[in-house]
Image (cartoon, rainbow, N blue to C red):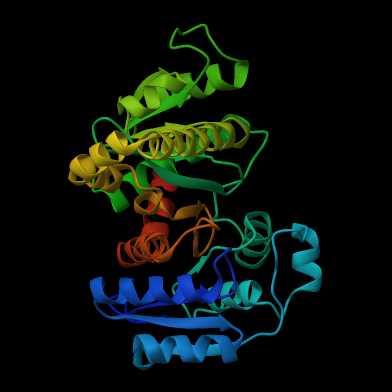
Amino acid sequence: MNNPREIIIAIDAMGGDLGPIAVINGAFQASKKIPKIKFIFFGNKIEIAPLLKKKDILNISEIVHTDQIITNDIKPIDALRKFRKSSMFKATESVKSGVSNAIVSGGNTGALMVISTVLMKTINGINRPAIASMFPTKKSETVMLDLGANIDCDVKNILDFAIMGKIFSKTVLGIKKPKIGLLNVGSEILKGNKIVQLAAKRLAKEKNIDFYGFIEGNDIPMGIVDVVVTDGFTGNIALKTAEGISELYTDYLKKTFNDNLYSKLAFIISLPILKTLWNRVSPGKYNGAMFLGLNGIVVKSHGRSDADGFANAISVAYDLCINNFNEKIICDIKKSF
């Protein structure tokens, strides 16, 4: 493996709705902020090379040409069986082989999960991987997992998610002792199904975890806990609901400020405040969902992410690599439960 201070990121250059332009612009932005980072771009060399030359990052980049692209309409199992020469598959393969330290892709989420799980396998002691990401809150940010990798979960899965979420919070957000909350239909002890109740009892006894208890959906944006643990079904619904509300209020603001001359004038006056607000809640700032529990660093960028968002996803991958994230999970798994 490479010197840990020189991180090589495998980039699926063909993934995402905006294509190689957003990906390479994002890599360029990340390279200006992160020292000793290098990229291997997987995809169509004819499209990639001119963009790299334009951004002047050829000196820290390598291109591996691939002909196949996994689009969003391709089923995960077909992606695994029929697209082994795709940019996504080859980029993931480079992490498994040790050529790269991490992969970042904005492509088909299901395909990336299946390919990375089959190629890398789960960490010893972890039954299932989980998708984790950050949410803005009233206080700062919180980590939430699982966001869609697992529809059904047992008690062991919930406990694993708590450990991985704790380490993610410490590594990416720098919180020394993250507070863990278990998402439920109520905060009372008797609320929820048997799996949630049993998991709560186990978490309450764990010395290495600061367990807050049950939280409800409206507690998430309040920042009551640093890590929100739930199953993938509930977590994905919460994620998509939050994204939908964000788009709704953005649309409301646009329509309101374009309503008449006075509202347009009000927009100009309030522009500095709106920019501050946008910098606080911009989706790009929180882009970069990690597939936790695999023997390799896999970060999923949102398919519609622009350059800013993709740069943030690269930063997440870099932080996980430089802080030996997986080694810390292995260590905590041995200590716990």
